[in-house]
Image 1: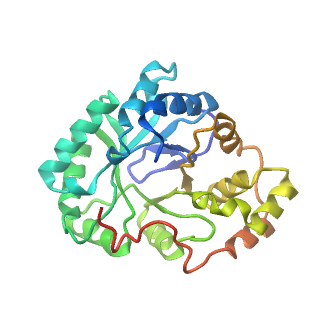
Image 2: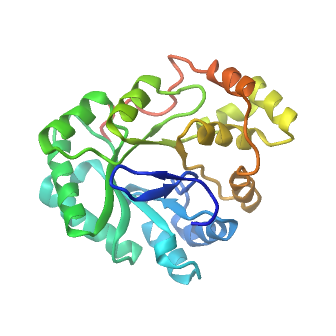
Amino acid sequence: MGLQPTIKLNDTRVIPQLGFGVWQVPSDITATVVSEAIAAGYRSIDTAAVYENEAGVGAAIQKNSVPRDQLFITTKLWNSRHGYDDALRSFDKSLSRLGLDYIDLFLIHWPAPQRDLYAGAWRALVELQRQGRAKSIGVSNFNIPHLQRIIDTSGVVPALNQVELHPRFQQRALRQFHAQHGIATEAWSPLGQGQLLEDATVRAIAKKHARTPAQIILRWHLDSGLIAIPKSVTPVRIRENFAVFDFQLNADDMRELAALDRSDGRIGPDPETADF
């Protein structure tokens, strides 16, 4: 996985700290876009069944010269497949679409608490890890009560929780719970769906370091011990977003970015009510 920093998971495996997300990447260009990302240096690719582009991710992996064991592939279980048997079947379909023998990280995409089936889905993930077909298992968009329930009922702590997280929505209480339980924190929409790129504080820090606003925000994630999975379909942006390993933010920068946190900073759905 090269010289880029990694995070050690609670199952002893490691994940690159900067990955590449393919949410909303059209299926017909996914293979090209992911190939660009791998060529730029990304070794962690994040997809999901509901994105309908797993096959494109798989095609990029197959035609690329980077060995499979140097790539870290994540996909996710959709809400309508939370039953134990459904979850196992859904995993098989994702594996087939990706054209892989195993998945590095398999996540429950949302808790969908109204369905009240996520604990059963978690049991399926535990079984997939026991079989060795999902090397690491975790969740996405889980709040503390959701996490506590699956830990209590299974005795297995998720390796990772992927949640909305960016300087305007820093999820400090959730991150504290993660730290107490050895759960890695991964940020989706780490750039705040682009909304933070025009923020005056971010732009001032970017000017000081002669970097792009996106690079400053991604560096904030890295310096905060977070995993980030930015998305772009533009080759120059893909490369720029990866060029963040040769500088660091100073204490003043981190304090100024910490001050951007807002109680109403969430952009995406609320996990307590989201049920797609």
